[in-house]
Length: 98
Image (cartoon, rainbow, N blue to C red; front, side, top):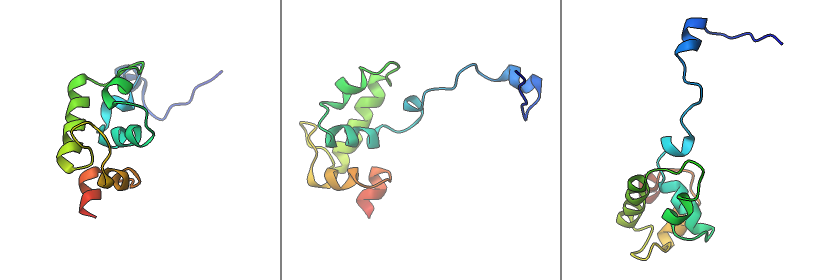
């Protein structure tokens, strides 16, 4: 087969073979809210089962941010606010402002 690219061969050679997984590039707060909403267990335990899990520090920071926002309680359970935030397609801080 033939391949037609819209970039030069020099640029293609400078590209990575694979892109960084999205789970490593995006904030985890929204994902943690969905995990809790679907009752899949603690965020850290669930996310560490992934093929390429995010770092433990990133998971802990996301949970801490959600607790500070009032979306999760100390036992990592969804609060009433957390249920509402999980239904919004925005960052938790923006959702709380709404």
